[in-house]
Image 1: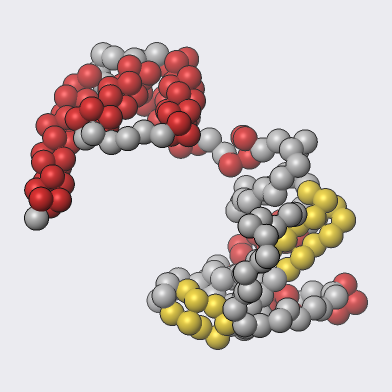
Image 2: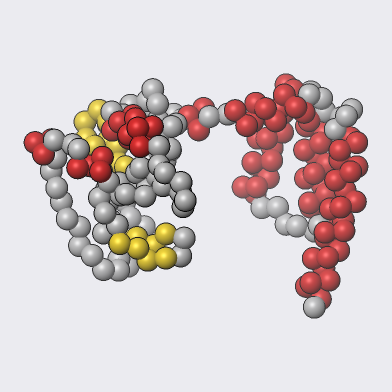
Length: 200
């Protein structure tokens, strides 16, 4: 009950703060608005902000500086920012991105999981999949690979809390047999590794 009362107080504080923030947005710089939100979260909501979060806030504030008081332009630029804007091809790391975001890029190795019906092509309940558009996206993903392409599908998958049987994507079946090397993975639950980390 004490926790519920505290949450209700937080909701009331937020309800009081938002109109003031909206008024400030008409005259204040975007960076100043970020400062106000940060201060409100720390002091009024008594939320602890760790070092990583502080760095993200500082980075957001730095990005906001050139926009001065033009909040709309800042929000539009943030919304339009692409996943690949932060991609560094020299970095020794795994890059996780959507098929859309991979357009125009190339990688030595490309791994595409979820090559199953209802996922590729993606099917929403009650709606037909746009098979040709999904096929085009799948082609985009495959052609990003310079040396090796790995396509994965599962026999069973938990999706939205349901354990489902999965059929391989029709797109896999359309690939010429001479181009494929099939490997079956062992089933069952994954065993814990002896070490805390797995080296890639």
